[in-house]
Image 1 (cartoon, one colour):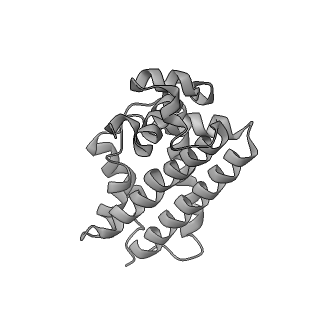
Image 2 (tube, helix red, strand yellow; image 1 turned 120 degrees about the vertical axis):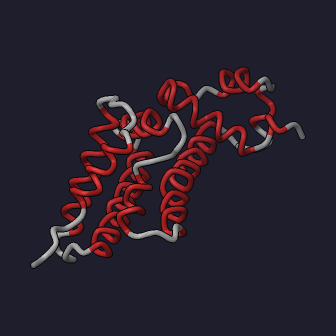
Image 3 (tube, helix red, strand yellow; image 1 turned 180 degrees about the vertical axis):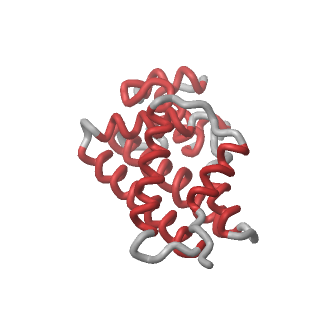
Length: 180
């Protein structure tokens, strides 16, 4: 089967359409045309648009949350470097896709549930890293939540990608003051 017709290609094209055009961009025929395939190709992999949307949300959660955390955890570096890694890399449409899904979650209960689960996973992950770097267990979740809110705000305003120096500043702010 042509590479353009596999399930993963449909998921990638759907996430890109979502990033580019929001949920309105999730039209089977439009995505098929962009992929250079027929609409029938879609039905080899998905029952209907609702099934496709569910698969897109699963893919987004897996690739843009779980895989990122797994990659960071596999780094044989100090915790500050792991925090910095969270702010680097990722596909070019990362912020626009996040904005599109967050906007979609305002009008779709299934999307809202996934968004809330992803938010909790991300905040909990950062809180764990903050505890590892030395923040007290009662303070780390608060700092993680505020950091995540800043990250969402950064994405929401369409801010440019952070420079290495800016990432260093953020990591420095996330590092607890030394005692003594």
